[in-house]
Image (cartoon, rainbow, N blue to C red; front, side):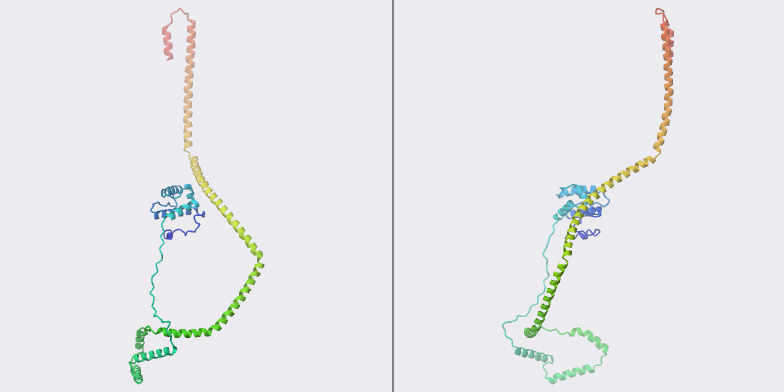
Length: 375
C-alpha cells in the first residue's frame, strides 16, 4: 500500500517471512532492514540515514536504537538483537513503524453512464395481429409515396426509367466512378429513426419466438433428459471407480499419511536445526573476528622478529658494557692497590708509634709529611 517497490528497485522483492528467519546472507538482510527503517522514519518526518554495507554494524545499531527510543518504539530488548537483521525484535520494530504511518482508504468513484430511455409501453392494451399488419402495410405505402413524391404508378416507373437511362448513358470513366463511390459510400448509410410503434413489432416477434420455443421445447427437453441420464450413469461409474481405487490404494493412502507426518516432523527438526545453525553462524562470525585480530598480532610480531635493528642495538650495548666492565675492573684494581698501600703505611706508622717511648717529643714534621703523602 505504500508502494515501496518504487523506492527499493535495487533490492529483490520481499517475502512475508523474510525478516522472520535468517537468510543465507546476513549482511544483505541487515542492510535491507536498516534501509527500510530509514525510509519509514522519513515517512514519519524523522531523519535517520541508513548506513552503507561497509560501515560498522555496531555503531549503526546503536544509533538506530537511540532513534527508536526517541520516537517511543518498543525497546524491551537488547540493541544487539537488531544486528542479526531478523527475529522478533526486527519484526516488532517494523510493525510499530508501519502502525504509526496513517493510511487512508477512500470509496471508489464510478463514472456515470448515459442511460437510454425506452418508450413507455401500455401492457394492458390488446393488440391484434390483423390490425398490426394493416398498420405496417399502410406505413410502407406512405413511405413509398413520400419517396416518389406522391405520383402515380406510371409516373413512378417513368421517373425510375429516366434515372436508369441517364445513368446508363453517362460518359464517366470507371475509375473516376469507383473513386466517387468510395467517397460517397459512408454518407449513404441509412439512419433509422425510432418509431413510436416499434413495440408492436417487438410484440409480434416475441409471439413468434414464443411459438418457436414451444415447438422446440419437447425435443430439447427429451435431449436434456437423455443428457441427465448419461450424466447420472457417468457419475455412478465414477463413484464405483473411486470406491474401487480407495479400496485398492488404502495401503498407499496410509503410507502417504505416514510420510506426511514424517515430513512434518522433518520440518520441525529443520526449524530447530536452522536456529542452531544461526547460533553457530553468529559464533563463527565472532570467532572469525578474534582470528583476524590474532592474525594481525602475529603479523606484527613476525615483522618485529625479522627486524635486526634490536639485535644490532643489543650487540652494541654488550660491547659498551664490556668496555665499561674493563674500565671498572681497572678502577677496582687501582682502588685495591691504594687501599693496600694505605693499610701498609698505617701498619708501619702504628709499629713506629708503638716503638717510640711515650715521654719523648713527637716529631711533628714527620707526622705532617706522612699525612701529606696520604692526601
